[in-house]
Length: 250
Ligand SMILES: [Fe+2]
Ligand SMILES: [Fe+2]
Image (tube, rainbow, N blue to C red; front, side, top):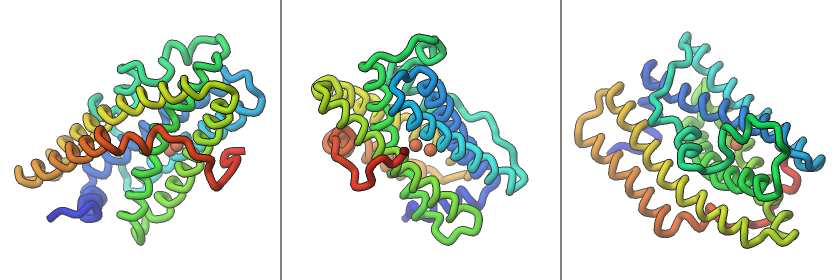
């Protein structure tokens, strides 16, 4: 049977699969960087703004790391299929702050800040879990080991920061709105994660020439995770707990 580790080894071993994988990752990181840069501009809170800026700078750094990994291999970023664009698909469902809102000049309201933080709380949970998986799968890999561990540690910090900031706002009486926002974002994210997972698997399967039984197995895996998330796993995305590491982006 195909293990996660052997799946990621196959991707690493094939130029075109590796190119797609790093391009999808770099695109998502850059988009996250851009969103945080815009939110920094629109955040009036002098305590929060530098943390959002740091968040954005980290995501830009991650984008550069994935781009450099490609260059090291003599490859360039490629355009990714739109159905693998996680950030764009989330936005299209009205999850998080829209492009139009982010390019406008008006400062964000408390509720919009909550939308930003709740969106980050949910997507950073995913990022943190995925990076842990990648760090594990590529442990000992000469190109990827250090980079994956570094990004993984950053994503853990981003998640800790979201918990802490949302708890701070909850203490100021925003608890019910935060809860409602987290739940609706988690529902949409879980669906989007499934759709992007299927799209990425389809594209990789084509490049790597996976036989039908392997494609079916991976499709079943994506649906299995989706069902788990829908029925039970969503809870881990909407709870708030004060992190052990305080002021992670301070
Ligand atoms: Fe990142
Ligand atoms: Fe992040």
